[in-house]
Image 1 (spheres, one colour):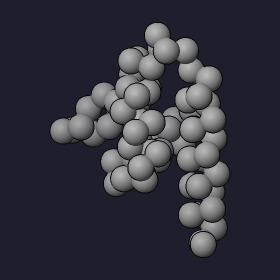
Image 2 (cartoon, rainbow, N blue to C red):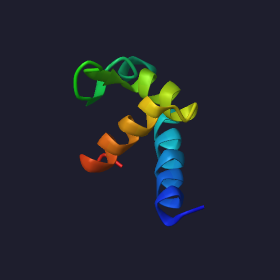
Image 3 (cartoon, rainbow, N blue to C red):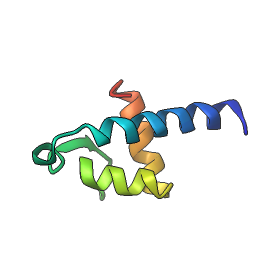
Image 4 (tube, rainbow, N blue to C red):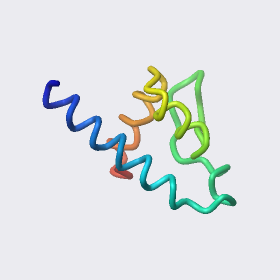
Length: 70
């Protein structure tokens, strides 16, 4: 596993731990805005995409790292 992959995996795990503590009422709030055509992403969508290691999940994770949320 390359260094970038190790860092990404640690950030992924950090997001999943944070999500577990996000109140249910907040999970429908927007956490990131991706470039068109995806647009705004809620906590719930981010969780599903990141948990399933999709391409969109990688983009969301990258956006959260860039904006220093993670």
